[in-house]
Length: 451
Image 1 (cartoon, one colour):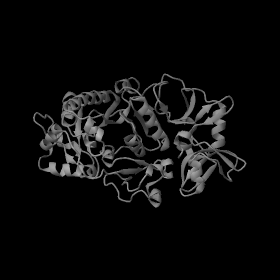
Image 2 (cartoon, helix red, strand yellow):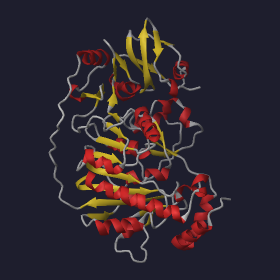
Image 3 (cartoon, one colour):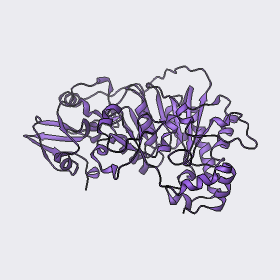
Image 4 (cartoon, one colour):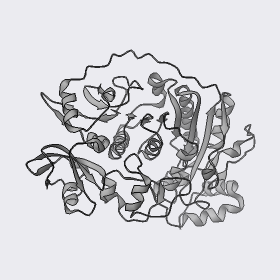
């Protein structure tokens, strides 16, 4: 039996009323796990032919399933970025509205990357994602997950949310504001969330969340959307905060979530002193109502008329060295030359539609590699992001003995011609190799190799 803080139990009894016993019972059940298919790498229909991780679909996530597989993170399909393991309730906020495929999107508090990668799967070839994380160690984890999934047109930044406006004012069509919170919705899953809970911490979190949400306003285009989300139940961090925000920002309105999310969540709570008549449009994801942990979400719409601000870029594009284009011509079947740019001294593959100032990004686009004296040393991200476009492919299957050897960092035999090649597992890139006379020298990063 999970032992909860008395003050928290009292709060939840007040919020849930007759549903409180059902909520308590749900906390003593096993946490629910889920995963999403990375549709930037493999289509949903193709993945379903290979799916061994769980067949039951999550009702509000088109490419989401409940996980029924031990140690999925060790499987070759995970190494190849076909799936992202994510708690089902945490998938709900990114499903609240239809994200258009050509939007420029921001995830303000993005690590470890679940919501970011979910948003990116909804963007087409022309959509752009900026994922921000304030803590540098967590930003590295975020960047690693984006790299593993081979996502193009993605940028990671590592800065305070207030500083983002310096670089990205009036830039985003959609902002995910998944704010750090007191974690009440994670009590079934994480004992540390229970141990660290206090009413004082709830109030402290609410102050920080209000600051983060306010910092989103100058970043959003007119007519854009903010999804505010937490994994907690307190009124102070949820409905009260949204009510204050709407009262202070008359340009915004609260709008309804998509039908699939609405049907799997409970209405927001109208509290004494609430000025927002339609506060019920906010949503509460409870473990006794749906399969997953606790979440709160609200969709905030900027009511001002949408118009595009034409930005003039101050920086001149750096000249692309012939070494870079010769390398790409040799390795890739085709590529868009306008997407080849220089960022912080290294060649990257990224859309020219968003200017990324020098020093503002932790990682910009797909890093092609490092320019040496007279050659390019390709980066792992290059194989993961542009693997489908390689001329030389080493095609393996998940149960191939060569796959096991490759993921352990060993050389493998191949009949692929000499040169840089991508290693594919059931059609998805997992890393790179340098082929010479029938031997593929392993370039799978040491930190990712199976032990």
